[in-house]
Image (cartoon, rainbow, N blue to C red; front, side, top):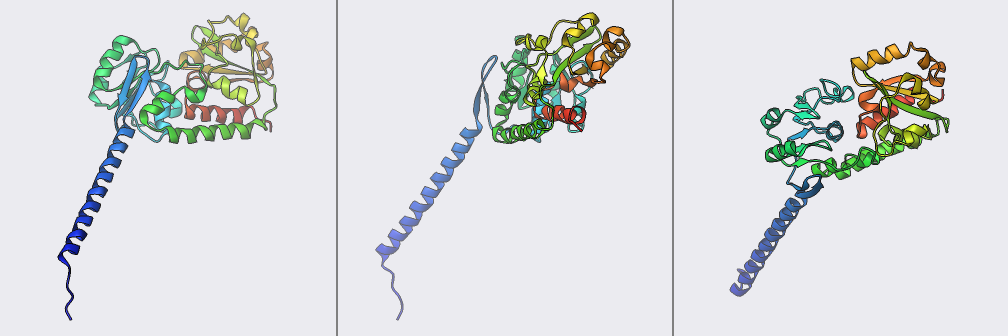
Length: 317
């Protein structure tokens, strides 16, 4: 016997299906809208709120910490500035950034080169001049942090991370550094003193213990010298004479240079009696290190490189 279908029932069925499709479409539309809104973020910068929309694909880094941050997150900037005191990218980052073009130096970005890269985000250095910002901000959203150089190392580049929308990824990377510090601490004799000295062509200056290197060494159980502690928010001291270098002598003296001129000046100083009388020098613990990391670096990759050096130089056999 053939089956029959009640027309009223069929109509109600079709109407229910249409309602279901409509609800699914509305829900999908709302989800897409929420995702789009989540990707748009407003950041408080040195020159007021800046809005960044969507996924960042073409980023320019005008700060060494910004370059460190972008590379650590597995991204490649379309341009960056040369290392402080040099003409190339920081040595410790070159392998990860071999194809990144240089668009000036920190204090003098090349505006035409930046414009040619068509960036959708510019991560600038703290202290960027307003006149330069006004130009850069017309090219792309430009992020200028207000975080001091002596802020906790994991917070130093936080605004860059927020602009990129990569907070979760960075949290994992910071946790890896903290776990490594914890594992190394027990292998280092506690209470050893340290001093980080940047050697410039004009002479040496002690670096603040509140910079990333000092923060890491202190976390490992080592102690800074008093002059480095007394610098407050200043990143480094004035130039010291060789005769005054004894004020920052320590169990470990890390000698940081930025370029060949600094290397030559340090080599000459190491022949002087005032240097050879230092406790660290007598004990073969006056150690040259990469100044681009030890006295200028910020970021996760810099932290890992410093810990690499500590593990190689300081650890008990």
